[in-house]
View 1 (spheres, rainbow, N blue to C red):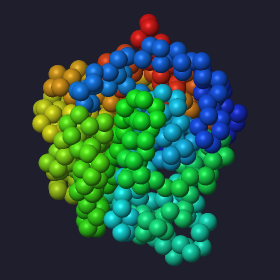
View 2 (view 1 turned 90 degrees about the vertical axis):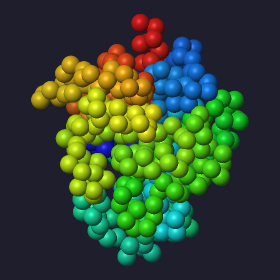
View 3 (view 1 turned 135 degrees about the horizontal axis):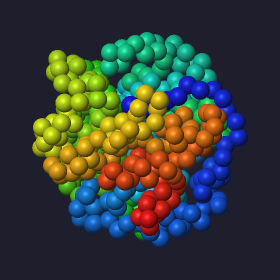
Length: 391
C-alpha cells in the first residue's frame, strides 16, 4: 500500500518491549507471545461465504506482511504475519517487470527496498523518471526482467525506525504475485484455515501508458488459480478508482478503493483532467458512486480521525457511518508501533525506533466502528482488538 508518510528521523535507540512484540528467527519463530494466544481466544467469528464482509470485525490486516519485524513484501514477512495471527496479509503491492511478470514491491523504484545499488552490473539502469507527476530517481522494476530481479535481495525500507529489521537484509528475494497465490494455497492447507490476501495495483495509469497494464495481468492469474470469484479470499485494492472499475469488469473479486488525503487527487483523475479530489469521493454522493463498483474503501486514518495542528487527534468524521450507510466496508491504513507514526498524544519519548502507546491508538480508531485496519504489527493489533472486544 502506498500513501504512507514515512518519517525521516534518524535517531535509533533501543526499543521498548510491548505485549508480545518480541519476535526472533528468520524463519518466523515467535517468542514471548502469550498475548497473541489471548487475542486468538477472543477472535471475532467471520461469516463464511460473504466475501469481504465475511472477515472478522475489526479485521487485523498485516500491512506488507509483518513489516514491523521483517523487510516488507518478503515471504519472511508474510509467513510471520500468519504466525502472529493476522486475519489478512497484504501480499503484495503489484508492479510489473520488463517481461510482463507481476512482482511484489512497495513501489516500482526499488533502490530503497532491495540491494540493487550493490550490483555493479545494474549501475547503468539507474535513471530518473516521472512517476505520477513526480520526478523519481533510482532503479525501476519495468527496466528489469524477472530473472534479473530474482538476483536481487530485499532490504529494510525504513532502517532508522526499524534497525532490528536490517538483521534480515539480503535474506529473501522478491516474490512474484503468482508465487504468492501458490503460497496462499499452501498456507491454507498447512494452517487449516483460509488465508486471505489483499494485493494492490500500483500506479496503474503509469504502467498502462508503458504498455504494461496491470489489471489484465492480475485477472489472468486469478482466473488461472480459480480465485476470481465473488467470495474469493483475494481482495484487490487501488488508489486509482478507474483501476478498480476496470477490475470490476474483469473479475468478481471483492474490490476496495484506497483514499489518500482529502485534498489529493487520484492520479487517474489527474491524467483524465477530472477535477475531483478525495474530498469529493468521501461525500455521500461520492461514496454511493464507489459502492456501484467496489465493496469497500481504504482511507488514510486521517480521514477517519483528523489531526489538529499540534498532531493530536481531533473528533472523528462521519466517514465510517457514511460508508456503512451505502454498504461499504472501511479498512483504514496504517497503524505502526513506532513513535513517529503515531498521533502526538500517543508517543512516548522521541526515539525514532521507540514504541508509543499504540494500544491506546488502536482503541481510539476501533471505537469509530471501522471494519478493520492495516498495521505493520499484527500481534499488537490482535491484542488491541481483544482488549477492545472485552471492554
